[in-house]
Length: 124
Image: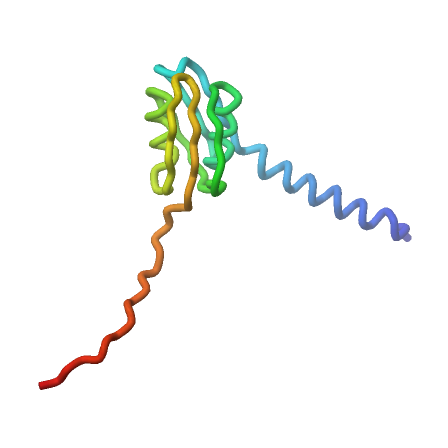
């Protein structure tokens, strides 16, 4: 009969293996210069892509963490690729020479419209 200590460790090991298995599918490759970037993403979140861009270029990110998954090859300027990666999000890109500050304001998901308060209707 397994000891009580071994059971929780086994469960933790399975959970960690499951987490590692899910993240193993995401892949991001970045090459080139600011004016000629080639980015290849395979089932990577926007946050993972921004992190890869941060390691290659002087890109700083803050705000809402984008979680949409993307797969594809993107080529062009760094600013152009940032705009395509963040399509659908509400964001601001500040450019200071080779330094980029990316601020994601919201997920950009459609919001439910809230009707304005009803004002008394006049019936003639």
